[in-house]
Length: 425
Image (cartoon, rainbow, N blue to C red; front, side):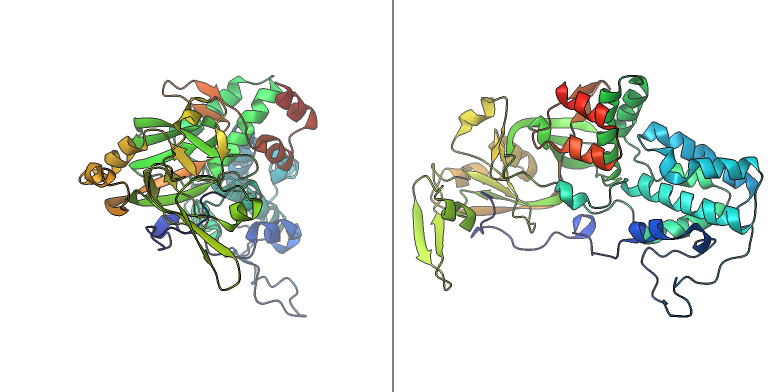
């Protein structure tokens, strides 16, 4: 990637807080889904594979709770919620809807109902809270899960104890204008399966998103080629951007902008040096201990990062920056970069974040790099939605520069005919 080089003016502190990369855990959803129904009646699920597996207890599950954990009324509530999951773009069959309906109609209770209801409720809760897709990294999505899987089982137990199953489950879904508008459009598009398929993909992605984006944040939807500064749900400012090309796509990240760098240097990634794609002036070359060459471009009017970089430390070395080639912002297709996001009128954006004090003076001395720490870091979301709600609630259907909708819909079990028709539009 163009941006995957180090920079002498860049901070190397890792992202922290709610936007830090999640600690990897065993795949709780896959483990749960593989269990026979008879093994899960009333067990306490802590989000990880059980540790107490022995030859005498091959399942590793703790002793079941008292029989009759689920009442007939709660099972009926769960059945209603499973049937209503279709409105979220999910498939009720994934949650044993037929077996659950038969159990409710037969007024079944005891261990058999407990086993069935536990599996259905936990799977539905996981998919409401974190989406149906488990391996999001295959779609270059690296944003931390919005809900801790370890808390879901305890949440279910508490909801049953307080008889608030519906309230708890619905509360796991996104609660924002974008999700509500997409869900309404999904309902209105009944009969147009290709359109519903596109909406279904985007409803799924919103279930991957943090539930609280913050009061003020930067939002870059890659397919839209736009950067928005959002303040209390209102667009404060908007800018055209250039994003990664299909060969070097911009990853989906939740970061914090921490500083503005005036007149940045650029350390060239080895991937560009090896391909011989280095262009421009002002480079100095040194040889590393391993024999590789290190190339650094000095600040100035021809620097590949332009005059300003907004730094948001992350292991992908992705940031927002200027460019000396500003004609690219007038193109319709702006998936052109090596991964980072080039921002039109970035000096205005930098002043908006930094307040402008000293920035103009620093830019007047183009050979000198200066770093301005933001008084308060600003959340930055680099996301990927091919349908989005406008301010008036209408849905705008935009391109799919990385061709990700089809692969996502296949994983969601969407009929191939709908995917083919959607792609043909």
